[in-house]
Length: 361
Ligand code: CA
Image (cartoon, rainbow, N blue to C red):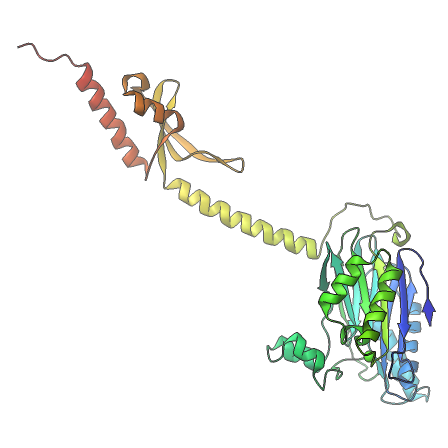
């Protein structure tokens, strides 16, 4: 199976350098894309992955709705189980499936097994799916590093697949990508052989999705090609994928919302800390020629002022010495209002001492 460049998306599969047959399958039916990695041997894996892809396409929702896409994956699961039962393929056959449906920059995903979806956003690769595999569980538990998982003897043992459990549930979720992001779907024939950093570099450097697909498959072959390798790449936000009436620049949920929530929390925490600090401070400043007393700190940070006027005293600035008068222009700071008030009282005493005529002898 092969599909050449259609502009904003591309996909291809390669048998690799070791296996005799290709049990992978993929789907390019914009806005729906998928990869599947069949298991079972003796052509049964090939039957399972192609039944899964065909059923997914038939059962796919009209809209990019992750829950509905998950239901399509369940239909595909039932179809694989049925096929084994009726003698098409073999019992024990199964397949992974990683499906993505686009609506503008929104991506709905349904996923079972150890094929993967990744998003390249601003040159950075993020793995969107979590592998349903034994080594992924060990990595999550901190018992293996991702590099150790890649070469672990049981790396291909998956804990969830289509074709065995009638009650199987797919992971379903939606992410909000940005225009210019690149979505990658791939079987473990790529991700088990080519490190994420290399995938990131290739995806970021390739001028078109087709170049990315070709270069990624070449990288898997260069790394030994000991598995079937399947890669689908689609550029996000290209007009070919737009369907339905969702306006560009509309509400963006998912990843961006999480970042926004995190950012707001950080800013709020910083603002609260700054506010608390400011409330413990005070300063005196020249305001219209008189010494004014403020709670807070003079000036502003990032456009936010953190000061509150307490009172403008009757102490004239020009009655004070020139150094104090000069310092009052930018504000003289104190640790709290009472210290500042005490200084005002000092000014009053100083002025009255200077202006009170010395008693006549
Ligand atoms: Ca595989």
